[in-house]
Image (tube, rainbow, N blue to C red; front, top):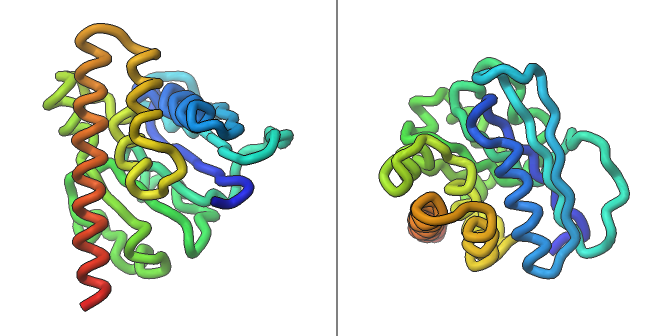
Length: 199
């Protein structure tokens, strides 16, 4: 693992972007690593673009600057892609995780995504999984299950632990079921991509 892994999370107010960044940082801490999470707001109203940042490292993290060149970008709302520069600064070997049930072609991202490694670009219908298991359209924690499978920066068990600590009762159990479903879906998709690249 790299000494510092930087993640930028894009979503809209009310989608839990700040909570997603916090959960990711605590999951990394649970894994025995250093972590920090913080948000930036364009506006505080519901539906306005919100950006969350998370750094994961093996040594104390002293910088508190916004992340301009992330190692990974998580997009909680795919409608932001053509309205703000959510993918700006993403490194060529970076990871891209999208919450969408649409294909990259339908999103108009084919040409852009070709700049990146196909085994590091993943879309997961996190909102649909949240609705199925939680009955609420909150994709944040769900995406962390897919993030664990995609990047290996946090363990699935650590994500489950922090979700269980953060929430309670049916909300916790629904989130955990959705997290596990996203992890398995991501793992299968990545295996299929690996087989396709090997052929």
